[in-house]
Image (cartoon, rainbow, N blue to C red):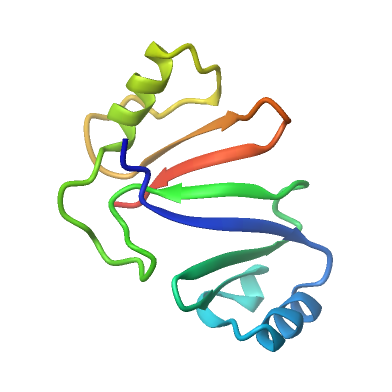
Length: 123
């Protein structure tokens, strides 16, 4: 199962303060918009998303079809195929894909310790 690029989406209290902190760790702005209350920051292949006021807890995020530079990769597993395989293994879903046959879609599951996992395909 190819889940794609991995990042951690952090629920932050103050976007500017968090941005400054992660810049000290060598992260640079990769995407997002301060005015929209989120930034995507990158250090090498490491990605973090900083989100102010969008959700309450941190989220593990996977992006099928993308590498760590948000470039499309060949031979990826479509999010709907991943969802189907996980369902066959008895995984419970907090949110399922929209049922479309192709293109962008996402689902949400929760691990045994309550950590939210978002599988979010953009292509």
